[in-house]
Image (spheres, rainbow, N blue to C red):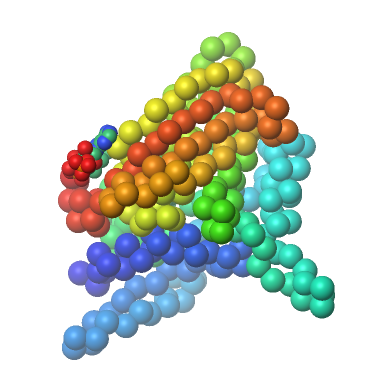
Length: 250
Ligand SMILES: CCCCC/C=C\C/C=C\C/C=C\C/C=C\CCCC(=O)SCCNC(=O)CCNC(=O)[C@H](O)C(C)(C)COP(=O)(O)OP(=O)(O)OC[C@H]1O[C@@H](n2cnc3c(N)ncnc32)[C@H](O)[C@@H]1OP(=O)(O)O
């Protein structure tokens, strides 16, 4: 197989190293004797991956305002007028992680070729999960701005608890992957404090609590965008896994 498992791991790790200018393009590797060389394939051979976390027409004013608030902090101007990376980095969001984020073009065809990321598989913009993630490496934090669409109803007029848990798992899971490489959720402990109105925009803030061997402990708060209302509090445990654990069907 042209693809090495190590390369996929590097792909996961690369998720934490993306600047907002980074354009991921599919790559593969070829073996010449014992030397493995990375080859960038011409982009016309592959459809351009769509970043689902860019603004679209369904985004409301609050979603746009919060997006711009963090996006502005991805690039700052020095006193000399030069641009440099800011404290936050925007993470791209693809519907096929293996194919687009790790560059596993062939592998993604072999393993569950019809599979699509749960939170990115509803075609109608704004109907379900509209969200964007930013990471702050220095503070070891991740934030997600979420606009919850009408297909996520649980209690009348409010967001389903399972949809909230899905987003918490997505945000803390992505954060743990950036911090520790490939992981799986072992435990999510969620306290629902106040319901989230359907259609509203909320913030999910994920913080590293501690790392102990294979264990990464993360906390996450879901609040209103001004921080005045606490909707949900979570503590989560992620366990580092080997790539073979990930690929062997467990
Ligand atoms: C396919 C997942 C890829 C993850 C990628 C994540 C992010 C990628 C980044 C961006 C992608 C975009 C979006 C991401 C979207 C969502 C991410 C969601 C991630 C998930 O949604 S993922 C699915 C749900 N997840 C499972 O489907 C796991 C099922 N499960 C297992 O696969 C095993 O269970 C495993 C591997 C967890 C552990 O198994 P294992 O054999 O490796 O480890 P073992 O059992 O020996 O435990 C070692 C030490 O952890 C302690 N420990 C274990 N479990 C514990 C628990 N629950 N509570 C407290 N402590 C626990 C033990 O007590 C021991 O502690 P000690 O060493 O101190 O004795």
